[in-house]
Image (cartoon, rainbow, N blue to C red; front, side, top):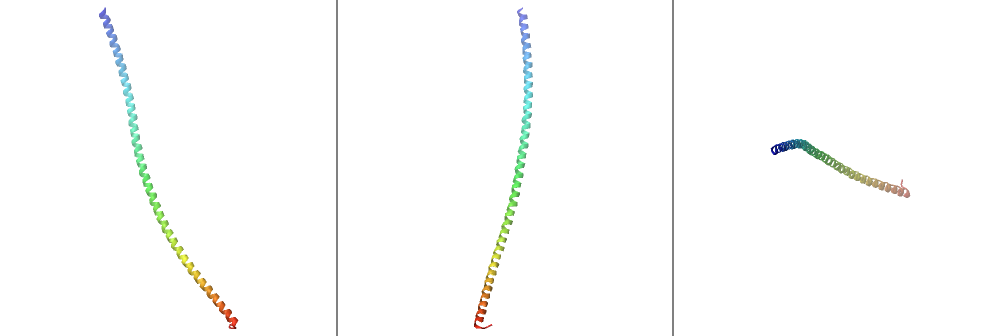
Amino acid sequence: MQLQQLQANGRTSVSTLQQDLRKAEEGRQELMGRLHAVTEQWEEHQKAEEVAAKIRKQASIEMQQQYETVMQTTNSRIFTLEKEVQEANLQRQQLENALHEATTKSLEAELEFTRRIHQLRQGQAQGTP
């Protein structure tokens, strides 16, 4: 009877061990599935990071190019404006000189006119037409 009992217990133990082994295998399969899913997510994340890095690099290059274009345009415009200011200052100086000359001639003419009037009056006063 003991032998039968031991055999029965052995079969139960083997059966229990087989069930535990099946559960362990199912658990291992589930973990492998999770690992596979996480690995795929990680690979997708890595690909997304690579794409984002490329986009950031391209954006940086484009921003640098736009900055350089703006600076070239700005510097060109500044140069043009400085030339225009120099030309305007030269014209202003020429106009001031012309005004000074015209004012001098006008004063000289007025002085001559006043001198002649004075001579005429003196001539009339002396009786000379």
